[in-house]
Length: 280
Image (tube, rainbow, N blue to C red; front, top):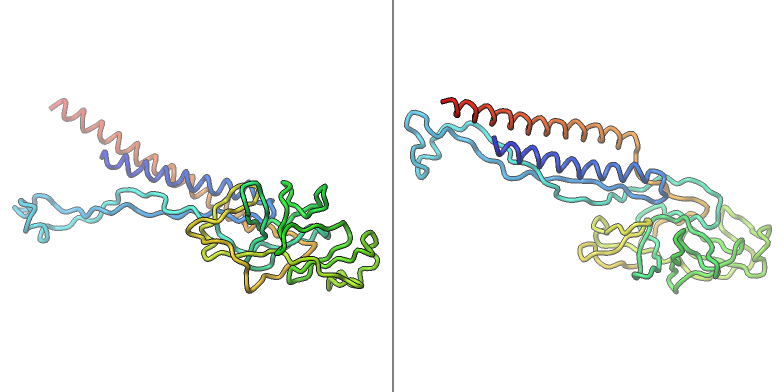
């Protein structure tokens, strides 16, 4: 019965971890480039139950255990095995802003921060005070040659992530030959977006502000060979399905209540046993 307390408590604790992940996913359903968190659990080793005394069998632990009648298995609880990020592609939504860039495929933008290079899928950028392409938090977006310095209406990014500028028509977007095909008159290649990948992106660590940092398990960042399609004027939506998250939240609530009942029942049984034994 006391074991039932710990089994129920471990189940409640596991559902708390799951609820935290679901709540965080729902809170970021409108965050561009957000990738949902997923929890996985593992069970503690199960106990194989046998009858201790059945017509003289299993009186001695050694040598007679295999012939004792089996009752079944008893679960001894569950624990959090892993909390990881699922990097499924999110839907692309059009914004018509030159500073919004989405990745259609696997990969990450590289960003310079005070803590070193970090990585993001959130391509909602802006033009900084010094003319650099930056995140909303003011961190410079990196090209393969360093921070990217542009001006409004004078740059276009093609599907390969190459940044083209035309200084002569910096303030005159009418000279854009084809916005759809990202072509200008007399363009000059400025730089190429630094798009990286990892050996095991599942083990990247979230740092807040839509940023990720590499870990020993994920491996160091490297320039991606099979580059994703870069789409300017679009943002990538979060890969969170609100309906599915709400359904799972209801499941968590019911599982939590079931584990509460296990603890309450075990406590009631133990109380009855003590009271009965005391009377005897």
